[in-house]
Image 1 (cartoon, helix red, strand yellow):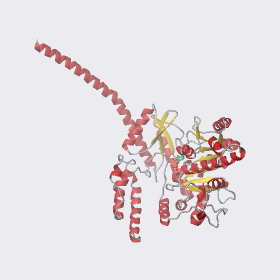
Image 2 (cartoon, rainbow, N blue to C red):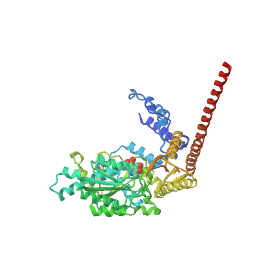
Image 3 (cartoon, helix red, strand yellow):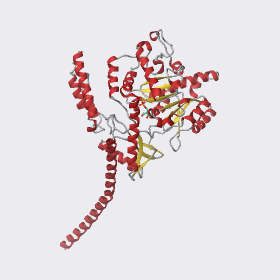
Image 4 (tube, rainbow, N blue to C red):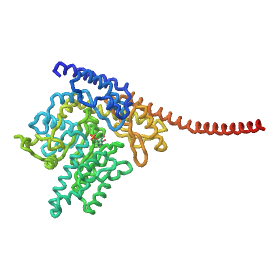
Length: 511
Ligand code: PLP
């Protein structure tokens, strides 16, 4: 493809994106395809000859788009938002266009240095403790990982290696494998699946401690578990707390967990994948309580900062602990500025070697929206969730299951779980809005998360109308059910009666 054709393809693709995003409300949020429908429409091999981009965009429109769930639709109310914005989309395009990798400073100095700058911008915007900033003297700093899962895994692995080293010194009579066999980690039963998975990948069990009635993990529960395990000869390594759980956006009590972790020399990591965006707001200052005492934390810019997937911020109080744990060198990776303070080689802070220039899309997003725009975005989600919450509260057929938290409302139809299940089933069949179910204490509920690229009050009203009319319909059908059954019974009785009469008539005629 020459540059003239590339230009045409590029312009047409931008038009395609604008058309897709500006008309997204016209599409059902969930696709109508069945398994293999997309596969069956595609050739089984790479085309032998190059194809014109027009054919490719045409197939994108007619084969691929109908098979997509539209995450940028305001009627996508499942999981948590996966945000994007014009600046971020252009940023992603430029990243691909420039095509650099930045695993060490020398590979692309601006790639590393821009990341240092935007991570410090973000830390200040979120009002994080100063020791997490690169510009503060000391071993702290931030890095962009691909996902919260990777950030949690990095923290778990680093904590594990630190614990092994510490224990080898403390108990030289034990072999390394004996020590590794005794390691244990903690989180809450409300934490995201990626935390348990990090334990599996790190070959270190993570105990999921039961959160209290209000879905919060507190120091007392952690303390009891650690004391039990220490008495049994185990070695506590890390506690992964959550600010903004996936189920209900509950906030673990970081202060009390930090006290226990400090007492037992346990690494404290905070997963704030979603709720971290609210650290920026003065009215949410309470959420930041205790963060000055944690070893590491993560926050997904691709959830709440209008940066498209993948982009997960992670901060470390002492990055040396991660670098020491993962440092594997080769002569071809060496360069003369290695080890310079403030010039990190980010390959030591992450799992892969290669790394994308994600800082570019963050930089462009932050500059095109400004801090004011980012704060307004988080506040908009909170306001829209409050609008939805009020609609739930005003309808006596529904109940809230947990306090509304940021852009998430957890609610259910009153009565047994079956009603809520059937309601969700109907909504999914109709494909107008998309929510997912969760469960706590035997009660199933629906999670309504404000999502989409540009949700508006009218979208919330649309979703609510869809939900409440489908419940009305469900109740009507349930009321009709016994009536129909009754009618069927009456018809059967009548038929039996008529058959009897017929028999009597036949007998009379025969006589
Ligand atoms: N942590 C929390 C609280 C989440 O809600 C999620 C996903 O929604 C994750 C972690 C996993 O995020 P990622 O897909 O970036 O790994």
